[in-house]
Length: 288
Image (cartoon, rainbow, N blue to C red; front, side):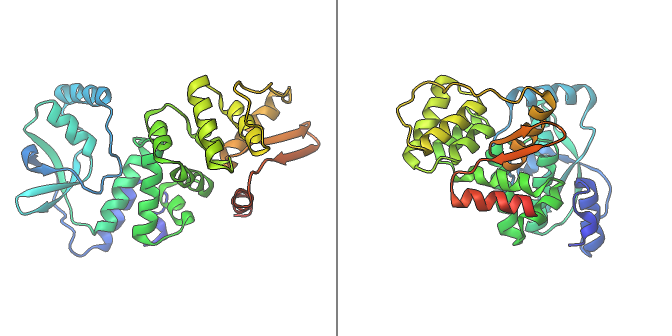
């Protein structure tokens, strides 16, 4: 696919597909019956916030559907390519018809459009987002770098997202439900021993550990300290707020604790790692 579509948003991607396709249907917006509309089976998002849907439904009752959904026709049915949230809210609002653009795309193109639509609107939870990235990588046989370009994100963001899929299923479920954060999840993943991962997960959910506290606990578990049941004594961090802000930026990008020792003019940086795989992951993030 042409690089001019990468990272430029859903509208540019759809426009490019229409330019490249000889079979694209170029008609304008049509009103189609909602009862004939079927959700996309490849939709990356599996859960929909009911309260947010109700708010959108109330808005649709007052103003209608401002942006048409995109569908593909099959017989007398219409399969959603983009706009499932608008479709669900319209159905909830009791609408009989919905404005739509009827288009034809390949399965790969439909998956890419559905993914980018949700990513750009931040509609996916962390696990759904990671699975969507993985599906895009496997379906299109592309690299993490290519995915990053398509969705307008950094490669490190994609890499850190995909790492979340290494969590056990129950921990993934906790992340989906918001019981733990992505930062907590990365701390758990840094633990070498699977049984220690379970210990840390229990401490996070039971004691409400912060991400920083979870990272300290992970370090202790990797060093053989398994008896601690309460958060360790916090180390005194650099008092300079600008240094703390930079440390947090390193944490967001590298997914591990980074300590800046020194001042704004001179010092050194310490990056924590917990296994050879973790060290290689950090190396890849730093050199690419």
